[in-house]
Length: 558
Image (cartoon, rainbow, N blue to C red):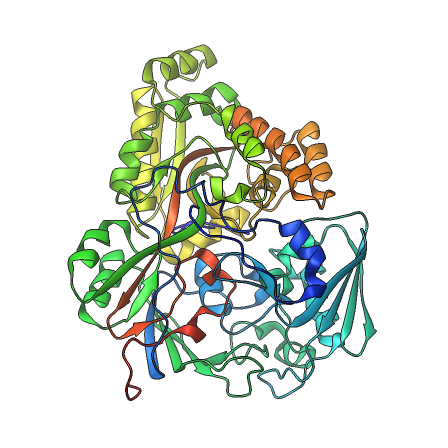
């Protein structure tokens, strides 16, 4: 679901066909996920980055590999896994009932079968003999407990919104859990492939108490288990040899915390780290030309936006939000901030998110959007009309990467050109994620750069963020008509019918600008010549990608 931006928070494009779900009993899920994965004709909207479906498969085992992350997770508690650093690591340790594949489709995870006997019931039949890292065997009790933690208001769970229609989660057999819904919910079963659907050992979580997620093990089921966590430096994952699935190719995965973009790039160039996602955009050229590895781009389902966090001031006037949108030099930002590997947009949703819709519906979803071109004179007129000339706004920025810092600068330049005063407030990379979880961290901030990645291949993943009271609705945008449409779309399992409703939601968001859309952005991953196997898509947020990483060449592990 999303989040931040680090560079930010959650992705686009591509040419990927849909993958068949491997269990016949998942027919209901196939119906609701429909054409999950970007439509073959949607492409990248003109982005110059060539997308790769994957990296070459590993040719052998490896003792260990080292991966760069831009910030240290504040916790690895799955209920708070709402940003890149947490999910990049956690996806290899904790598993969910369903699984998001590298092709961005759904398949069975810890549930071997999911069925939908009626519109308000989902039944999950669990895999037998699955072991937790704490040695216990997974039961239905663990699933009931794990999903229940997401609903507990005392946990401040980031995924609680996805359980809003759940009335009960009950054990209906030793290896069966039944979820009852207040009303039909097309999104809930899809989110069971994200951190929302993680299953951990009840006994293990309870034993850890308040320290769960910060010290000790995580008592999950993934191909790796949490090893040494050297605060401020690195997190090590050790291969779990009791894993129920395919054993990881590496014995150890080491995540190095490198908050400075130049340091991350230099570590890759020197071989200090073997690879990483979220490559600093200013380093694309150096890494491409280095000869020590390959920079890949893949489907990201990501949009780069300006998140409006306070509508009590000038931004409460729609004319001011429209003026800033008109004044933004999106093309310049894509060239400089995204290294040319993106495409300008006036849509908060990516074209790939509409994969489940017909061509007619996809076209309708984008036809009514305003142009993404710059119009300074029209923007000036709107500021003058709103009486906002000379008003001051504050934008958060960070040294996380050029995509953040240059977008903040672009906002400042746009505002200055049209008569606003824009102040920049610099926030440390490790503290930037707090903007998404701590209202106090947003005090005095009117806007900040936000890269939002879809956690499922459905436009509603993003569009629901503007419902009254939604987790990422930081500016408290509220529109009863919009809320009603979100509820209506959520209740429809059939993709085409649902996406026709979502087309109207997209139109309303474009008119009201609770966030200002800037660009679509593919996923970037760099691998040196020693390793291969990592997926190129945003699936790494919820898929155990590190288990696929191994030696690029056959031979002895090293």
